[in-house]
Image (cartoon, rainbow over all chains, first blue to last red; front, side, top):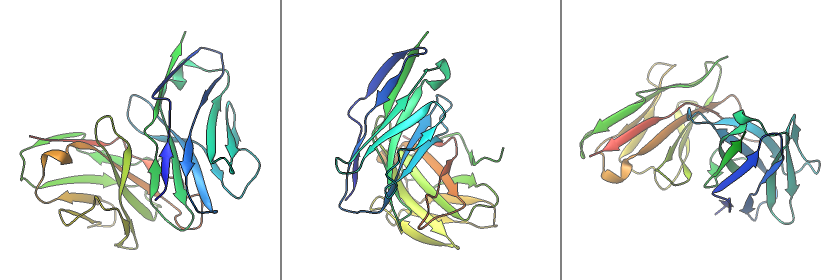
Length: 114
Length: 116
């Protein structure tokens, strides 16, 4: 079974600085998708960024980018120029191609200090 | 902006009682999901639903759980006889795409279930 591990339960960053959240996963599959979801205190999870495993190029969405290392099964999220609104719980998630169930990591709580 | 809505936001029930959690997915979405998050633990997949039937379910989704889409808009999760360990936040999600695509999920704000 696929597992997703987020080894950092909590992280903090100074406003305007850069922070990297770690995620590793375990799978024997070659075709899958990876996601980072953000869950602000209002509880609704929203998609931050996604990566298709077949793409070598790392995904980027404005201040958010990933470092996808397929061989190492690593999928870290980098947040540049951190803003107060970035404070949230961040979940890394995995989904096999051809399946609808998404596997989540335990989450990393990010605090942004002014 | 369209969103997934869930009711109730919080429900307290006695052990053994039936509970129905309701969700209104985004209107043009075709795939529907329930996830749960026990306090302090991972978000766990329960079930996916497409074309009026369950497409996948986890080992958590046993005979005590059922889902239905009774009227083409609501998507409900029923727990027949609640147990203490069913206490969790239940998230509904929907997606316009499913298999073979990135299938971005749109989540509701969750329904917190407390079983006493």
